[in-house]
Length: 333
Image (cartoon, rainbow, N blue to C red; front, side):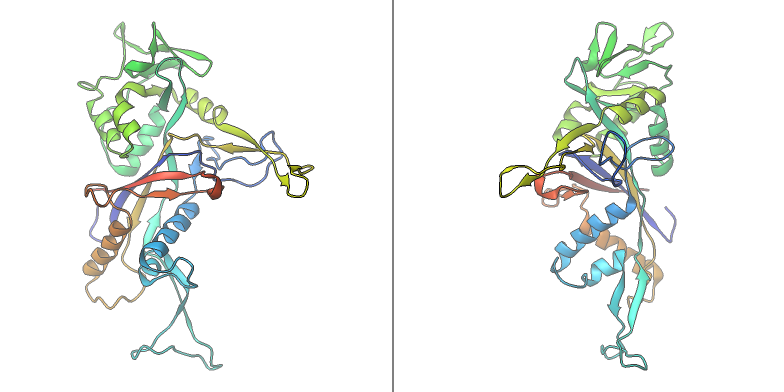
């Protein structure tokens, strides 16, 4: 962290299926999710996150249905509609008698949310959280955290204890051999080589399933295997529209929608910069600290029992319960 910015790690754990759509498609799936162009990994765009956080700020500090966001929300996320006021608090008007508008960016820089752990079916242990060396390397680069990342051969896996069937791990319809190092099976070791890795991942969310089963159900696979699973093992559901008069399916209203399954983990990095508007604070460092305090107030870190990480709704299908995510923030050094 430098003197003119503060960085926060934001994790999003999906409690229900998540659909952040990329629009219509001519492929088999009519409504696909947003993916990275070069990897095919699921991603939550920064614009979607910003909209969700802005709405959370509206609900926390003001009337969510008001025309203009409250001052705290405008400070963090910017505005193009705020009236310009003079020293006496009166609106400033132009030559035509119209009130001048202030346009400025927010002081929170939001990175798109990248996938960190993806759930798939497992023959043993019910399901597994998959990650891969490339994902872990990007997580290290974005957050500055340090831990040892296992090296894997293709079609090999470093599994948790609950996932092993004989000498294999069966994920979806694929049987992967356990990675061998010095003629010994390489498994996740919470007391040895993987101690820092598991410790670093264990506190990313307060979800009891993640904290209780991470060591047993985490599996590190080869990059190409991970890419295959995240592109073929998402949830695809058929959706229909009911004709209210006949109470039957409306003609031509059948479509397929792709969702990220529940129990997936995404992460983003929020960077708080000095405020882009005049806050009345002459000390830049103090103005930055004030803005940073507002972000921490909006997104608790869960250390206080009375201030637990909020459940935010992200993406589409809010009224059918989709997109409910536990959202945890942690300040980065």
